[in-house]
Image (cartoon, rainbow, N blue to C red):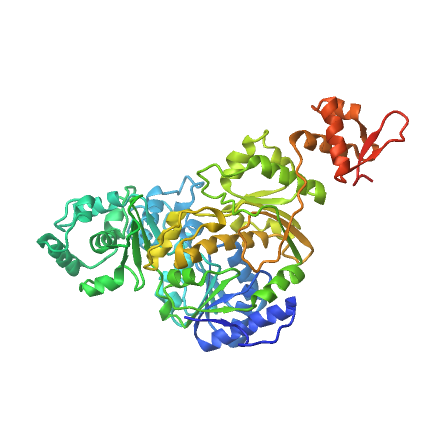
Length: 598
């Protein structure tokens, strides 16, 4: 694996331009297609990654399998195919195209089909084998599946479509944005799955706990391996389809083998590179792919199977990402990806500030991990003051990106949800991923940062075969070791992705960031905050609403819940900080006028 500049080893520094960066991206992609390599290309938003991947395919006559998790990316790809005169086919999915998966269609919805699909049975097999599936004999999903996969110039689909070898062969894979959920299966209750599997076979072990306590040096262990040699790590779709509504999974044989043969990492996690160990024991691993890894969190008794598609049979692989973590891409794809960055850090700074026209202002020097906040670290009172300050300073309501807990529980609980009076559209860290409404919004407020929890970092360490531990410290002093820190930085990089969701049209955009979780190269400046108390905010609201008429202390008292003494004190403080002007020469009494009033 390697990391290189996409254009040359020692390019002379020139300030980036939008056209120049887009040319670099297209040149890089064209070279990657011609070289038939496996490459992760790093390029910031608005650099034309998706555009160039399809334009270069047209110019080089490269057949593509274009994979994206977001529907809007797939729609964009279809429009670009039309623009470049590429033939294309959107690969169907049961949830989008089969009435049996549409819960709103009560005439055809079939919970058995949904459960079977979620438990590891493919859409085509469900239609072939599930008795009396309710979508009917003329299912649109099956109709859309009936095509020659070698015919279109571009196949467009979900990442999970890469499990079909016929979609990979003879094509260059383009994966737009990092995602792993399509290749990872989480088992929150592996005991139930394994117990049901053991009821159906003669493996010499009676229960999940029995397998956990297995000793490699006894006869039962040897006999269990012999049974697995005879039957292989098959996908047990038959037992799923027999009782599709029960908690079972087609990967139960693989899960049982991982419990039997997994080894401890010393930090509460276990790991097994499934295919490698199956080969070692002479077991047919045909139910999983060659880079599959199973890990187990012993504390939570949760198991995860990461099963990357066979990307190595494609003509090549191109990953597109604005803020990638190469180690995670390599593990998720099972490929030894070479990492190429279109811009060095100095040029990235100029690209963000001068090309994207972004001004990033920090309102906090702490990480503020608002996602998975179990310790009450969301500071609603201060965040409300910051939102009010932004609204008053900018004269507009910023779009808000923060955690779901902050939006749904914490912010509404402070002063009747006052913070929402000062912000516009709110999106949480999850649903903002499929939201494009901020691209024309030029004022943003990102409050807090993502942190998926220590188990998430340890899980990725387990996938990599690394024992990850925290040093027990907090904030910026916290460390997870060399590999774990890569995963920690991945979470911090998501803050930059949130920032860059605003103002995608290169118009001047200001984003306030209530966290220190940004890459070191990002250009930012510290805010000079003047935060108002609740009474001061009420006085400020009153005076701004009054416009050029302003208000006397008596009028402020009568128009707010603030008493006379406090009204005078707060109005004076606003004047001293430049928010209002005090006029002493009025006939009745001194009046305070908001400075932005016309």
